[in-house]
Length: 290
Image (cartoon, rainbow, N blue to C red; front, side, top):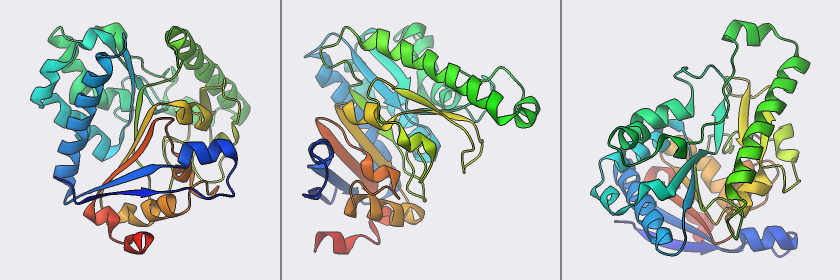
């Protein structure tokens, strides 16, 4: 189904922790977007099933975006769902738009409509296994006219709420981290809601799992995101990208690991860092493999 798998090593000059996180990154290229979506959905279901044979529960962070939601929709139609004990699976979110709970902008709402609600409705997944990031209780107009300090305080409180939920839920696990995290990548190289040169990239405390993101360069301006240190503790970090508009960002992230100008170049998992892209997103990268 895929064309090739390549392994790209990080720089010797990187810090020891970053070298360990980025030392072995896998790149899988699929012929087109639809095959990519099907492959990622299948891989996700099989990895969850595999992990459930070795541990009591599996914690997965989902992503939004067009391709990310397409993956969840494909998972909902995949017969491999039948092999998973969903009561032992917990779903989280890598980032979220801080808007009203019923807003169509919410990653959680899109994920529910694409997959999660059907699992709950069929009795396969307990509702309490879906862990949404907090939503804004104000309407958009009120949030837009609020002082920046007020928005920051509200975001900080929301981030701390999700941070504590993660801490308590994962405390029983030996590795105290997420098992799988899916992320897309933006044309500017961002992932989750971690944007180039944004203050959210400056969180270095491993105990801070979630951060507020104000003044986001991409609308809406208020967001929540998992932090880089917490993402890098995740066992399996999977990056998914499709289309030529993502090619330059994917190229830069893979060729220059740990580049402060490219947040997604820091994407890494403790067990695996896997980039899954279609051929269009690979279109400018051939010289990386020379």
